[in-house]
Length: 432
Image (cartoon, rainbow, N blue to C red; front, side):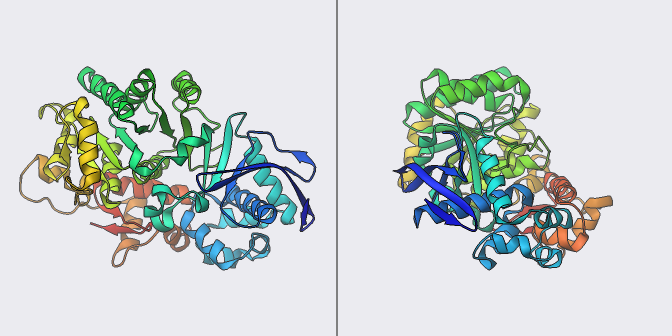
């Protein structure tokens, strides 16, 4: 039994798996069920787990801002000090005013641990939380933008796999029948090659790839843009249950209760790209979110593949444009295993210079004279003005503009989809 700041922790079982310590305990006499496991790195067992639980509680009210959260963790040895900081200090780290008020409203250390415990209990009978600081794997390429925690439902053992064994298959929600069949065959081929199929659980290509992996008897990972206690899209409840029962996992960088927002999905796509050795784009329109995933994969030095499609079909224009920028052509599902092996051996480029992919699609697909730079109005125009020069992170923009992070994120998403900005490793946005 360890007592720290009035909060007790009794460790009743623990296990070391893949360098990650999984701890099951009792906080302050309240039982944390098997679902409520928190993975932490190496260190003093009792106190470290308690501290991580408190940091998790702080993250649950922070709002999605890993850069500012990381700065605070570097500045404060323990989360209790953050609660005592003034609003001005917190906003100085890039935290928006509303989030700073939520942090200051926490009533001492006990409230932090209680919130962390509530997060762990809320993930359900097959859920868990993991600190990415002790996780390793491919997320490190995200730099300061790495989410501090991941939530999951399903087999934690999947996270033990090397990023060399994860392959992302992505594409349009509205997909033609040849594209759907290709995605399903790719899902099956990936798992038959001994790898883990990763996708976003969306309609269309994502769903087909997950089904292919499941029907081939393999494991698949669904990286969500909502909390793991949410089902999005609602029609995929059955599919997600199949994933969990089949030894796969639902994974999310977002805290419990977070619903679907447009600006959540680019962050989700970055996690997919970072955790995978390669990204395969099956079908993508010119402004598809799948191109954002491919762009992130290229920036992270991962292999990028695209399935060629009819040039006259709108669904294939984005993938074809990737091929003109250096992505590798994947013409059959059966060849994916061999191509991935060659990429790992260095026979194929591990990453390609796609540049700001979405921003160059018009020029690639329609070789006409270079158009004038677009003029943005409203929120997007305000953000463009702040990005001139050296660029800025979301946290910096929130502080400069005095807007909620959701409003800043919506404006940045509009600019990203138009090709006006690109997000760099580390989280800073730059004008193209």
